[in-house]
Length: 192
Figure 1 (tube, helix red, strand yellow):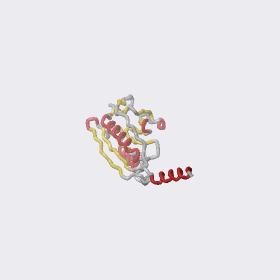
Figure 2 (tube, helix red, strand yellow):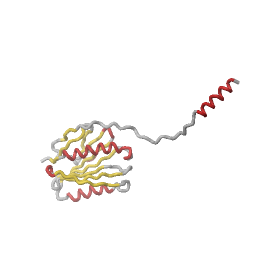
Figure 3 (cartoon, one colour):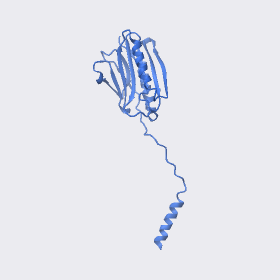
């Protein structure tokens, strides 16, 4: 009899103790720790350009394009992302390179919710370009750009993450890397 009474008391306690309705928690993402911003100069001869880049990145030549000596990849190791930079010498064909950059950006239209173009100009250093901020949760490359002096040099860049695109959860990292890229623009110079 006492066992039944104890069991009844436990059941009553459990039922009366559950007056709050359970609501599932929304899906969350891991907290991302962002490193402090410190930069160093990429000034390697015979490269026809130089710029400042973050200390937490690693620069390596583009191994897939061995015949293109001035193509480099900037790896954002903490974020598993890469900024691909390709260089071309301009020989009365700048419009072809600019059209190519535009073509690469338009390939993102099916997944993009918006593409914002921003003109970049640094008259004293003769660095001019166009920056494409590509918005959308599933776009493969959230930022692409090109820089040129309009007569001799042309550099195209594109940022890619080495995972399935989910730019809503990567938004803080994307903004963090974009600040680094804008700083690169401010320090970008052509070698004379």
